[in-house]
Image (cartoon, rainbow over all chains, first blue to last red; front, side, top):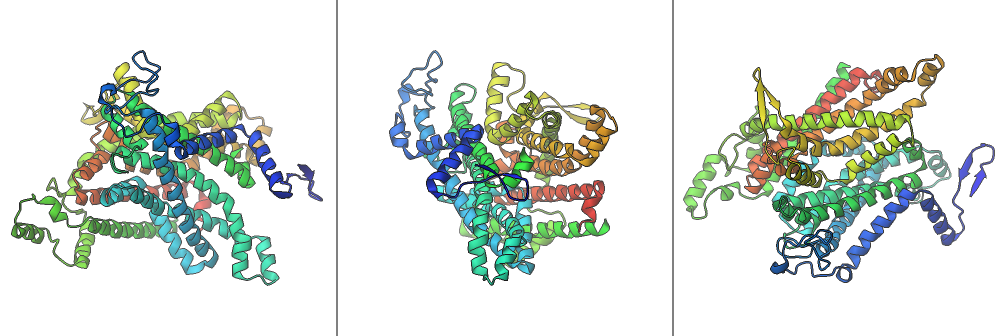
Length: 308
Length: 315
């Protein structure tokens, strides 16, 4: 809905505030206008569907070994057949089924890792930005210190010490990613705190609680969702990387990193074992990045200027 | 300027002290290093003797103090497996990693800067689509997977490059890289290439609308002149900080690539040390890479301050 803001001469694009259905229609319109965002959303929905309905979608049990049909090439090659569309690995396990089940590990790590990092980081960033002074200096000193470290080396170090389990991997990514969210939240809080409407709220006697919950938190949601999408895709990468080094979930669990690790050993003779799980990672990462770009444009119109 | 450098120096020293604390207590978390070193049928007396010899039976705070003072004098402890000073092992591997990281950065700059410039100067053209695509690819293709695919296609099928290892040749006493560095450096540099394309493209878009560019156009300067003298030059100042950060990332993030290509560098040493549960060496590598990254950040900030007066007086 286009209209001219009174007195400014600027055309603004305003979401009509008339109920959920109108808002949903507005979001759909925005999605339709930006086809890459739509593509990102569709990809992410496909991946989520694969994770949720894995037992119904995958043709085989991902752990079922069948040595007679081991190392079958994918269906599009001459020796392949449609029994195993993407072929089988060294133990005869169906690669398609393992990729479908692998979405569960990746999305679990990405979702819960981001949930931990975002919730803790948001609280710390809020306190740091709102209280300011010495607290802010100490928090930001620590954050900058952690962000200055070589991330991969430390993640690998911690993972090697703590051992292989899904919970540990989630906790590692959840905690090491806190500083990013602290920094984003704090920056936003500083910006919002100086804005006119906070001053107005304060001048009519609003307390800290009201200002934080009523005026600051709702304004944090946009930037945090954007960062969370990008961080989720980064965590899925790092999880696969840890799995590739044999430091993520136990080898029996079907995960993309573990599959790549197996595939690497047979790379020159049976290259498909490593190819398809990697494509799954690229596909998921692509979806999340496109969706993140779209979130950034829609939720934070100020950034639209920079991206163009 | 001196004050700026001094404050950044103090800050860097603070970071490194924090790193020492972190890596020390991380090693404490690994449990008893001696039990990892001795064979299973060693007698308790032998274990105790080794513990005594290596000083692991002292109070934690004393151990930390020693660790701290040793690190200041350049002693990063002994590798549990190699029974050699960790620093020596690290320095032996350093040239290979520097060669890899520098080549990767070179690839990223040679591809990234022109593509970003072309994309940013003609929005929505063919080159812009290529530039945006490169930016997205850099973020979505994991380098460890790209490395595997490159090996299958370019090494195994086409035989253009060796599948693994590092070869060098000497000229006037200088060690020079051969084509064995091409694939690992390209795979490692992919993410950096994407970052540089993205950065240059958005910088060009931003600078194009500056007043001084309009002035240059109104003076009748040629496009080429404006891009070279005004736009690229102004974009290259913030590019310094991107390069510094990315070089640190390339130096410390090569563990996958070095493992895949059996590249005899720091990342490979780290992977081996983890495989051997040689946590003392892991600790030393973690500290050393942090030192490199922090030093690079410091150098970058100083160079940035020298190049751009707005930074050094901003404080």
